[in-house]
Image 1: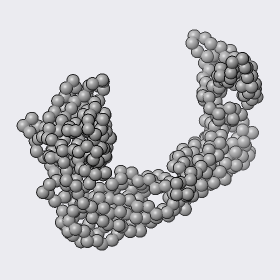
Image 2 (image 1 turned 180 degrees about the vertical axis):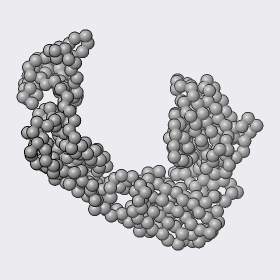
Image 3 (image 1 turned 30 degrees about the vertical axis):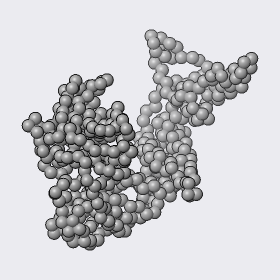
Image 4 (image 1 turned 180 degrees about the horizontal axis):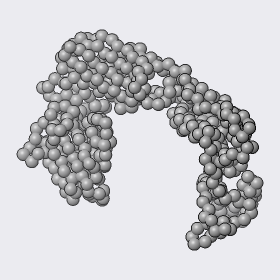
Length: 480
């Protein structure tokens, strides 16, 4: 509380909520993973032609200034990768094209999976694929922080064989690095392994981002590669920012090759801000680490945060009302308070919305959106607190009192020639319901309408009910 103008004014600090969360890592599940023969040769681009392009490929920039060459400045495996640039604007039939020249014995009706590792902050429009009419296209996504594996499973038809693999760039990019292309039979990509070479020590998350819906058990898979059998220590750690919140370690005996190591854990009311899960393999001859981003979406945690916010609102209302009685500017505080008072209901609706699963259970699909809204409301609450401490000067708002704004020199003005600015919403059902709330939001314009079909539902029929309803809305707006 503080004393101002002879009055005690109550205000509430933005609470730093201590979440009643629980996060634990509880164990590992380890299983060996086999590889499939790669139908592509020179898939890691270690063999280079005299022109500087990968052996077994052809390259044509066509009607672009795109370039393609093998480089040694970065590689996921081996010593080289493929690098592509392009500064030609996107246009119809404008692209640079690389073609895999060796025959691919794909069979009609059989499932195949194409995959590749990509590294690029801004790849533009680029893809790997082929088939009749180039119907199979695997977009190369942005991956600014490191190598990212993408994959596409497809079934060639009669018009897709013989299959020709293409690499296409269609729009500007500062650079795309590509490595370890794989084409295998089956429904999913298998670990990339160069023929005749032992894999380098590596830990790779199998999901770039993991989202855990609800409370309870969770499992996060990693792919671990080691060149030779070894006794190792597996160390998993979960952190938020620089703070470690959970850890688990275990000794294990791993054979040479590839292993799927799944980190298991339990979550209860965990917050939605990003966490990072790392898995490290430590041994005398092997050491590697990988990490993935995690987010937890807990309905129980969201309900608790919402209730805490709801209990703070009456205090805010009393404080803002006291400031108004003292003649202090509260325009911006009132806007923030109005948002909080109304959006707690919308968040509650999202948290209560449930869907019955085919198995007869229940799921809450809008928890993620509710938590995102709660994060935004936290920022609104911080703004309200700042306005209570140091109120901002009010601005002049036009309010309709039966007079119409004037149009002068292409602008809306008041009677004194001052410009008028309008802010508002389009035609949604909630707009009509919220008419009385809009002045506190700072809204002075809405767009609602009645269509001809509502007035004339059939030949020779007139329905004036929409007109009466519109009139009632306008009368409510005038009173507000």
